[in-house]
Image (tube, rainbow, N blue to C red):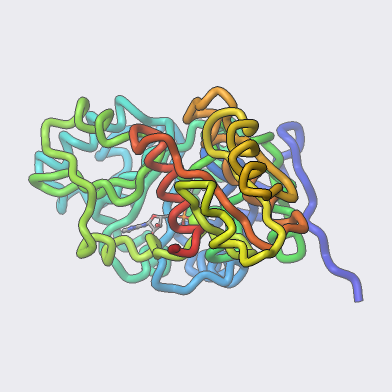
Length: 348
Ligand code: TXA
Ligand code: MG
């Protein structure tokens, strides 16, 4: 039996992907955050295909991607995506301010939806997450198809998000016709997700755009969503981004032996040169099988860009256990990195 392999398309040859999307198929596309598995958000069959290819449970809603032209509530309403009638003046003000400041870019805003957006996209919720990606190839696909594209990260459900076309081919190559290769994703972690309310902006998922940056732009308070709102964002499951091997975040490397049970291990150094970490381990008589340092200069943007690729590399390495050092702070992008590491790890 032969396994079908997805064809890799580049900027010069997007035609087949555009046609596939128009006829209701799914295609992996690059964005500045992570690769997405895209399908027509108006077509329930296409959306159902996204869920089945990813093996994603239907209670976890998808983000809808829009082209740069749809940069206002009225244009999004006219395009059949957002229900302007259900937005209060405060919500509209927050939307317009955030769109001007951060779109195109890694920000998803949850807004009242119109009927045309398939209920499957929103898992039956009456609101839809909308994002205008900055990646030029994502923009070109959105323009050429003329469709809003529902796109979750292009990984199997619960696994590490892909930041290169090769990652997508590894995960889903046998299940989809095309992967558009747009190079390595610049941001590396998924978009910041916010829900706009009449009196508040809820931060549902931390990303490159931090709560502090959001607060500077909107006049309403910005609050990290408590658990009740996590229900409204069902995809924020505690266990996510999971490597196949057991993964611990260890504050004090001197205590690594407690976690590894005499097994071989791999090491993810979140910030700084790996030598300091390796020295502490050596003093405890331990040596990792393989080490990945995601930002030797402790730069959170660099760490975010390298995070998922390093997790994949270590997951494939022969060590039996994976250990990561914690982030040096929870400011800005470090919070997004800490969030992804926490979801991927076993609580010690
Ligand atoms: O950067 C990104 O956002 C990437 C790229 C491809 O754009 N996409 C992405 O999609 O990360 P996904 O499906 O892996 O994550 C979407 C998150 C989930 O946590 C989901 O629960 C939440 O957004 N979400 C989507 N629509 C929602 C809605 N209507 N209400 C509440 N939460 C929603
Ligand atoms: Mg995802």
